[in-house]
Amino acid sequence: MIRTGTQYRDSIRDGRQVWVNGERVKDVSTHPMFKPLVDIRARMYDMQHESALRDTLTYDEGDGERHAIAYKLPLTRQDWWDKRRATDLVLEDMGGVVTRVGDETVGEMWSLFDGQDVLAELDPRFSANIRTHIHRVVHGDVFHVSANTDPKGDRSKLPQQQDPDVLLHVVKETDAGVIVRGAKYETAAAYANQAFTKPALASWGNDEQSEYAIGFICDLSAPNLRFICRTGFAGRASKEDYPLSNRFDEIDTIVVFDDVLIPWENVLFYRHTKAAQFLQNTLHRYSAFAFVQRGLKFADMLIGTALFNTRQTGVEKIQAVQDKLAKLACYREGINAHLTASIALAERSPAGLMMPNQSLLYTGRVLATSQLHEMMNTVRDLCGGQICLTPDHADFQNEETRPWLEKFYTLGEHWQADDRRKLLAYARDLLNSDYASHRLTFQMFAQSPPYAQMAAVYQHFDWDAPLEFVGRSAGLSDRVKGIEDPPTEGDSAVSQWFRANAAQD
Image (cartoon, rainbow, N blue to C red):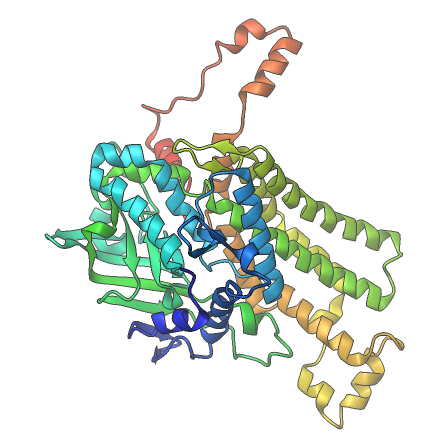
């Protein structure tokens, strides 16, 4: 059933080995760099129990218990409308955007659910395991994250030609399960319950078997795991000056697997490169929706910041300013249109799930990520240089400096100096801070690098329709059938590698 925030906090107080900024963390639920996100995730759990929110965030599948809408298998278009509404409600309640909180990563398991025939062909146990774990996520309401990217090492060499641990791999089989060694980058792993762990690279050539082709559910309280985290942004400066950094920084972690036992019931595929390849090609079939929806909410944050500034300074009526605001609106509505259309034109998956229209979803993801830097710069332009020049909150409070700052930052009776300071601090944190730069990079690579996102668009766009139209229009209809697709077998090793890695994290 749905958990409470207290139950979640208790679940991560399991003695896991976590380090940040050179310090061993005793309790991730109370450490100042982790606590803001732990509190947000706990709040999400508690929201599900509130009578006013319960029907939006949870559902009853007939077993008499409530379950999270976010984790529900999507069987109808209405399921996607429900998921979208639930996510909007959560983000509105938090007042910001967080990405790795479970709903954006659980969809990767649904992709493997679609591949049950592939898994069953290789080993019937694997197909049963994926069904079991999807059931456990729904009924256990666990905090589920994703583990894709390895350190990789020298990418011009195979892992066997260097330290083999640069990619996570199996080093031993036992009756209880497999022993794995290596490392993975996992955002939020230090304060989550489990991670869907799978290969990021698939450069196996024609090999049918590989010790690197392993996908499993990792219990993040398992022995021999080590969590080495990047230093967080929370606590570096005051909350008044950096309101986003202090609340919404999601801590990234390199998780070291130092001979970790993965029980057989947690193994979703093993050694079979065919299964790993299937997952790589379909990894973001569902999870891209929640990711792009975050991009839509971030666009709202950009627009709201720009609009507040233009109204505070009285320049909203200037045509050049309206042009830039309209540019932001086009970006926002472009993302919105892709999300909406991907539901309206949703497709049935091989396993019978309702799958967002793949071409519209992936092109929406490219739109949201590829133009983000330009939209942020547009908001910088609309906010002006004061976002990088304004003194800190302490100076607005100091008795000697406050009168001067009140004089220069008050914009008439409606906008007092503190109103101006709050907006400029928010804009600085949204656009110019370490947190802002980190988020921009994260958005670019969080699901896959730009070339892989473009490859996903290429693979899912309907090229036949425009080809046939021009064929009829130009009198080349009899030639259309003679145009063959690009070769997929027997082509260069480089082409094979790029195809194999099109969905890597």
